[in-house]
Length: 185
Image 1 (cartoon, rainbow, N blue to C red):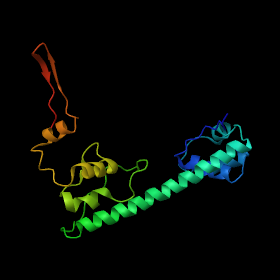
Image 2 (image 1 turned 90 degrees about the horizontal axis):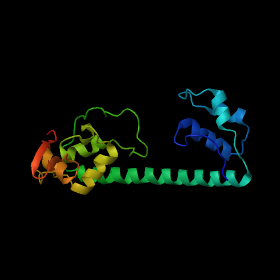
Image 3 (image 1 turned 180 degrees about the vertical axis):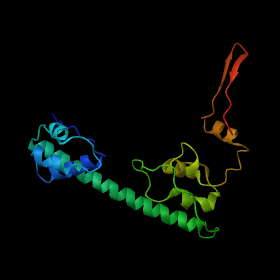
Image 4 (image 1 turned 135 degrees about the vertical axis):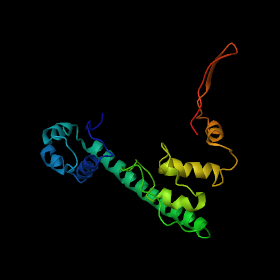
């Protein structure tokens, strides 16, 4: 059996309430007060979502999970700082960048790096990969870590997308080409 609470753990309201539960508060009326100002859910709905099984062993497991969550968040932040240092060391002999455009994505993606990936990678690449539709900060870092900063091995974007196995294919049956789907350059 579990606590059976209906919370979104990644949300600001959910995390606040989880922390208060771990600090030994169980009253749904008190817990509902910890609603974030950006949360549009009614207090009554939050109160109803907090009616659950608050047995000691479940609260203990929740507290342990919260402690581990905090440890992993700290480790990810430490990793981001190390990554930032490595990128800065790599870029120290390169021409500094005046200014990179603002990020397209206004909301922070879950577990995305805390550093500005577009600005950090621009001196090495000459482009801001995060401006490409569909490439967020995490994916841009993965791309550079897998392929390096020199993408001249691929003569065009079509060759690169084909190598990544994301290029659309052709519809061929019995040797007859019905349609060819071409990726935009």
